[in-house]
Image (cartoon, rainbow, N blue to C red; front, side, top):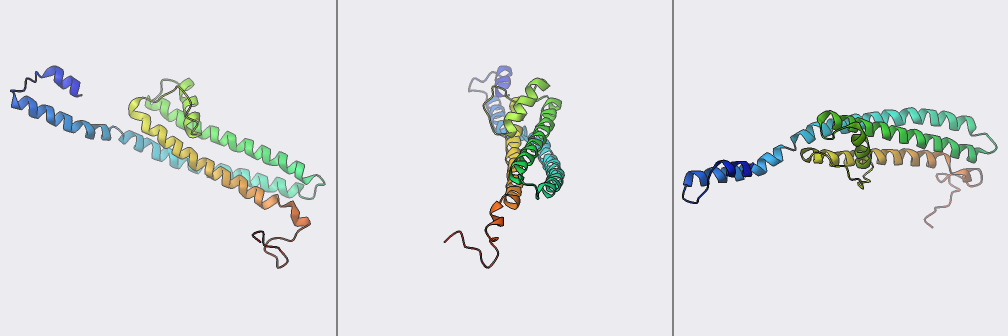
Length: 193
């Protein structure tokens, strides 16, 4: 913006009007730069909310199926092996859920013109949501803050996924229950001792 102004106005140091106009342009540039990030907030925050809702609903569906499957196999002789397969399938479903959420971000980038096509939007989105970051794809300059918001969204989504999978492991895996009493029973030994 300043370069365009300088090209239109000859600043020779003796024209006070030209100097005052130049200073006002220079003073407005940081504000203009800050305002150019508004679109990032306007699109990123709703996308974060939508993907979190999709994720929680998806985890709820996976949870229902996982509890059903675990209940059916609990009495099986080779429970541990079957449970590992069930958990692997649950992890695969969660990975598909994450890919779907990255696709929502990629569609937003594509529709906003932040990236030229779907072939670049999806790899960029997967890189951003996983915070991988090692890609030669870049958003248009005024959309780059949105990429940071997607990384923040990815941290939230992966945190929910980690808590979900860990919760299932904690609920089911203590196979020592058959041998050791539960931790909340009076006969349990405090592991901190």
